[in-house]
Length: 137
Image 1 (tube, one colour):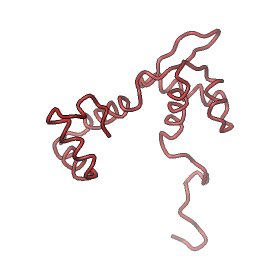
Image 2 (cartoon, rainbow, N blue to C red):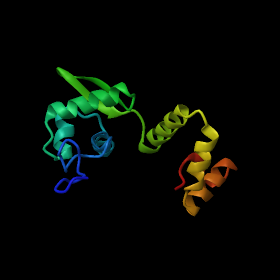
Image 3 (cartoon, one colour):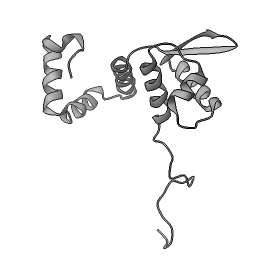
């Protein structure tokens, strides 16, 4: 790399959020609320200074992905999570596995990186043990 240049973000924004970070924040706000929220209410709940239009765009994308539901509220919509956090994580894991032609290798690598506690939980789940209802780790 030429002297005087850094390896920061290409767009020059050092404060850029990780991919999916905004979506995760919006979903967290919806889960915490426990009731459908309008984009303005989500914006206020986030307290990050994001524009309401940005929050609306994120909610619209999440709706398109099936992660949130929406119902008419005045001239706009109120949004609610379509599922709880563990169910969304499971859905994402399935989606990633469906993208891979070698599902067995992907699963093997996933399992090889589990902590001992997570491995034990998975073993219990596969054997029909205590965590079978999903209430484990």
